[in-house]
Length: 77
Image 1 (cartoon, rainbow, N blue to C red):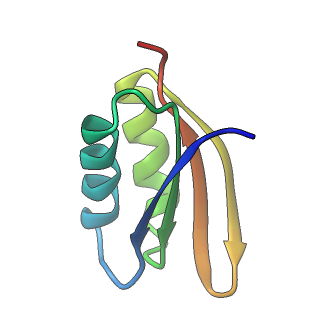
Image 2 (cartoon, one colour; image 1 turned 90 degrees about the horizontal axis):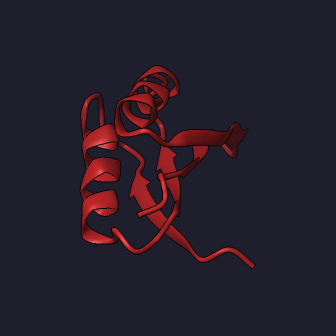
């Protein structure tokens, strides 16, 4: 099982979901996989851009009960 950090950004508008993800990645630099929950549809655009900028990758983006569940992986340290 992969150790994941979950970030709940439901109810926030752009750019807050991406900022919360970035902060979590900085705070948990020893972790590689993060799950971002967001309701702002812009997260579909912003998160892949953030991951490209940081050298990571998007594993999946899916709709779950009215929210987006974005799974990303940061680059290895």
